[in-house]
Length: 308
Image (cartoon, rainbow, N blue to C red; front, side, top):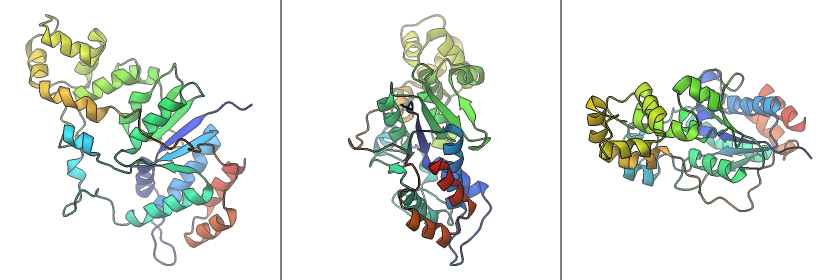
């Protein structure tokens, strides 16, 4: 029996990359298709290279969940489209391609999963947690937030596409995290991320505590909770400016983990099918779709990858 290997796609991260990385082109009726073509080709490359037995395209049903905004109101606030009730800013030529990406996945037979009130990160966290013990998990993303899931013992790694794309991603395991950030694993990375903050997500972090200082504190105390306990108990190892800064960030540190930590308990359908299809599920309709939207070699490569 073939061992199972689950691949989870941070879909928006990938199709945004495809939109900006693939040259603009339009179908005869004027529909832009670069994100659609690029995303289709990405899946073909990933399936061919890593040979997952199971694959889920994880979706942002809510890109700015209420529970995170309640904790830190600035969370992603700079990305809200002006004049709307909370829609995310999106390039004009990308917006019409997103429904086409959903249709492509349906025709091919690849499961797409989003859960109301949650981001794709939370779906990924939950599916990773549920797959524990069944086989390796590869999380494909251009977002460092998901480094917190890295766990060598559970065979969970991240294929980080920010630099090399899906053809040459960074393979993020515990050794990578130690070399790059000075932390021993995913849980410690989440604690580092809380202290460091992330301007792209509207997270202020602890003023004056950068990545290296945060890593040093974690090396000494082990966890953010232990660091905060040391501050509260007057531990002499934390003094001067570091103590002042951590004390000043007390309220932020109370709520930030609620924003940074991905959910591991999202309700997903009990009958969720994750198995990668053995060939395109609806070949005739997919062929028509590929011709209509000028997918060309991308569609052919995905069909071949699934069949193989």
